[in-house]
Length: 127
Image (cartoon, rainbow, N blue to C red):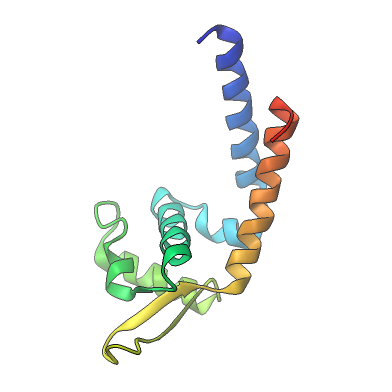
């Protein structure tokens, strides 16, 4: 890569990080606090796009090398309490709790994605 392309990539990354860090969006105010919390949000969104939900145990496995089980448990419970994730008993096994992103979370993420695309267009033009 030549120097010009590297600086363009750096510029896009800097703008994108600025959008995330300066965002007053409640979703990113909550999830942008750590690498673990962003990973949890992205994995839950991606997994639930394919499947309707994932078990709480599957949620707890995300980021197990980053945070203690207690921290992960508390963070997931707080995300549920704030309305970013929802939970319900599994229809297959009543002992299991299923976790999924709420419609509000999906909408807030779509709004953030729109801001990302605006940054991308302003840096490189087009989609």
